[in-house]
Amino acid sequence: MSFLAQILSFILLLAGVGFIIAAAIGVLRFSDALQRMHASTKAGTLGAILVLGGTILALDGEGAIVGMMAIVFMLLTVPVAAHLLGRAAYVSGTPLRLVTGRNGLYGILERQGMPLEERTEFVAYAPASRAAAARAPLEAIEDISEVRLALIAPDVAPVVSRSLSIRARNNVPLKAIAVVDEAFLQATGDVQGTRAKVRENVARAIEETEALLPKRRSFFTLSYEEGNPMRLIPSRDDRGSLLVLPNQGWCHHGVELATPLATGRPEGLLRLADHHAGSVLYLGRRPLGERAVIAICDDGSDEIVDGVDWALRAGLWENPSLLLVGYGAPARMEVFAEIAGRHGAVVPGQGLVATRGTVLPDAAAKADALITAAIPRPKRVDWYGLFWHDTIASGWTGEVLIIPRSGKPG
Image (cartoon, rainbow, N blue to C red; front, side, top):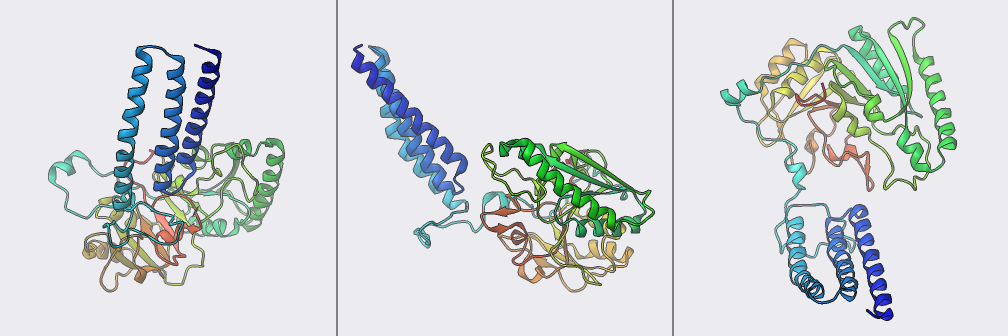
């Protein structure tokens, strides 16, 4: 092979690898499914063809023939595969950013109103068969054993005050945990400088917490850790533990710094519930009323029934009124009415039916709290300007209690 062919082969290989890297970055960073598809099929295919072309120049005989056949095969199949993937993504209801401000396929191609992951978040209620009941006995939720709260600066007063009131009703220990996210420190590139700023905010939060506590505080413990919040904050083995969290914030404690060494900003507030063995209470953005209205998202499971009974037994809300919402089927009024009667709550009116796209219909958006087994994906506090409360109901500002599933840690 001549020197010129070697140079050309090297240039093609280098350009091909560059396009492949660009395609990989596009797949990772683009939020729109069609944009990710374009990145993988166009830039990725061009990169692969250039790499094959550079390799062909360096090969002789059968190797070059096989390389040419591979290029022809890619040119014939990739456009068809890309069209089918794009069509499937559109029809399934995957979110689109609509950069041009309009949907050119509206009224031409039928499309689902919500993404697949949201449509499979809950299942319609149907009585379990005897075989299923015998196969998977339900693990009852233990009585509340502790109130566990995450101290996340700068606004800790609402979480501490709410935790203190719940603890007082149940006479259980109160454990506060302040964690600094080690991944955030590393991602900033200035670990020591960032750590000093975060610790300063944590110190203020601890001082504010101390000021809210009563003089007699033998029930209270406080721990400070640096590491992985998913491992340090939740309890993995105590199903009676209640974890109280704010509705926003993370373990960088209000320190807003760029994170150039991470693909995205480290956060995970809404994913803490996946790692906690017990129930998780996310605070709302407004104070609770004297007679709280509690919306119950009835997914048809026995676990949501046990979760409601546990929440009322623990006295999370005083004299509540229950609003039942069935997902795909009428809510089980008589089941929850019997539970409400045991705990001094009421179930007025009829149940509502949930609508697509949100957990609760608009009629339930003014409820003070929601009891549910799961929250919609993506589990991020802010998703391209959409606050996570708005995925529950338009204008939602109430508390959210996530009850534990049998398969959760512990």
